[in-house]
Image (cartoon, rainbow, N blue to C red; front, side, top):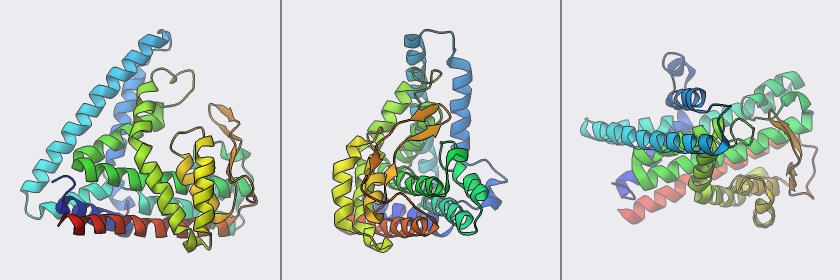
Length: 324
């Protein structure tokens, strides 16, 4: 059923359900979210296998072995759940509902919206708390413009990681592909860092995440560039900035959606920042853009993201028609 009209229709249903329902708190207060389960597995492996006193090559081997077993488990679990759901009455709807849990458009929009609301109310402390939920940098070092730019960068990068990439891997691999992607993306977010503790143990997770996001990140950048008009921006400028600046980002993938968003809005994103592991002297994306971002710019970024989500859905609607 992969790359079939059925798969594309299930994916469209999942995208729609995620946009409408998102991640309701009333549900996930009662049961752990699947990503929480994945994170618990990674955390346990990090505690048991990543021994600080072990040589770097041994830790890299241990991390690679863990990622291989973890990936195999995610593929097997996805296959089992999909097989069971398809055998039940209303299987495609149940499958769409399950897949929607692993998409993040609505939750991303809501989290970024809270940052804009905090800034608009004049509460920098509130906005810093809100932005700390979606970025890894030290929020206490961010002024109003820094908080706004961080929220906009998160909207762009997580549109790729939380919406486009999961959908892409569902289209190619069904629920096993989607769950495998989320497993690796979760591992990368937890251990795929250049800190002394994770440089070797998280190497395999980070490299595999780069591979899995290679095509989705470029698709996400193209969608954001095309959607630039929704934020009163310039798609042509967004495309030009993306092609010019994406490669200057320290990530081989995150620069594509972030540079597209920077060009679409006419603001500079990226630049030096401070993470828990230490400072990062990164170049600016759209360096000629203004840097005094505020809540209105976050609102514009959200409009661009929503328009890009609509375009994204149209892509799969077109593929469903072609495959029918």
